[in-house]
Amino acid sequence: MPMDRQLISGIRAAFWISLFGVVVLSLLPTEQLPDQVSLIWDKAQHAAGFAGLTVLGLMGYPDRLKRICFGLLVIGALIELAQHATGWRHGDLQDLFADLVGILAGAALWMLVKHLKS
Image 1 (tube, one colour):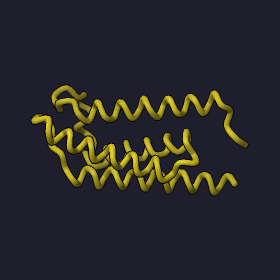
Image 2 (cartoon, one colour):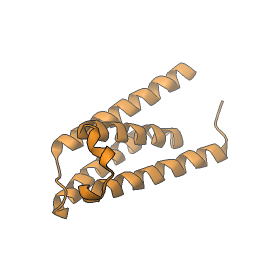
Image 3 (tube, one colour):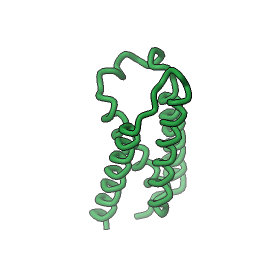
Image 4 (cartoon, one colour):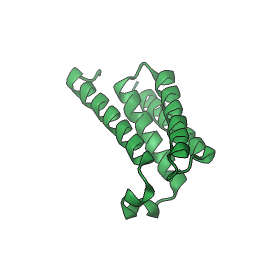
């Protein structure tokens, strides 16, 4: 059963707000982040964050699998470049790889649920 327009609009808004939040939090100096952030392994944060963004993006734009996944990977790369340029954060290829793992996991989960629903 297709989702109604209002629900899709809400999911799309949640995706864009979440994406904005991830970008902002990724560029803040670490001293300005809540202490709880340091309790979770950095690579797990990247993977979980990008998995969630992928699922939200695909729920809101279900016909744009490649565009959502590629776009999120580009954003992950741009975040790492921006972190490198800040002087207070460090860009890291391993973080970008963790983003990719999250994107692939989110896409796989979305495709599995989509397949089980059909």
